[in-house]
Image 1 (cartoon, rainbow, N blue to C red):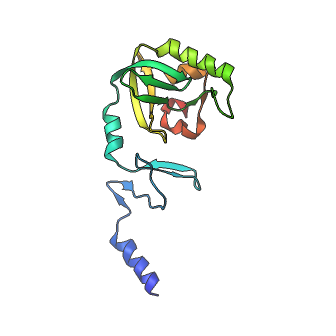
Image 2 (image 1 turned 90 degrees about the horizontal axis):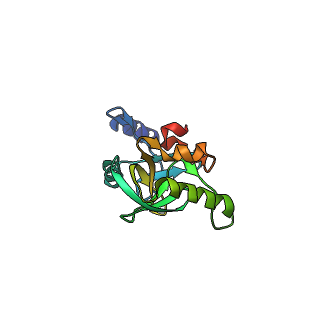
Image 3 (image 1 turned 60 degrees about the vertical axis):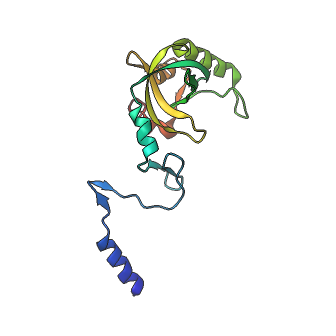
Length: 166
């Protein structure tokens, strides 16, 4: 009886939303960006964090790409490691390596953006502390080009991050 009464008091006393945004109540740890990957319910969401807000404040700025390690990972001249959002390309190394198409994807991506200024839309950081972002040149989305030319596939698990990939 006490437990039922306590539950009722808590549900009345504490709001479940503020300014139209619902609270998400869950257990589990948050990553460095304040995000939670709820594998049980196939849900990935982020809580407010100053680090993520700082990422978003750098959007739209030009950066210069030094080179691309593979078909979906590049480094800027400033040393920022960038994982191209919403796409996946063949792996160069490891158990799932497919080196021939992986090198083709890498070389094509380098021909598009290495040594060039690109616009960046930072989304988050991944578990390897790389910036996950969309890149574009003159309004043309680089990830979309990679998919259209057959060098990459849409990474369905993270497609929600890019409006064009849904």
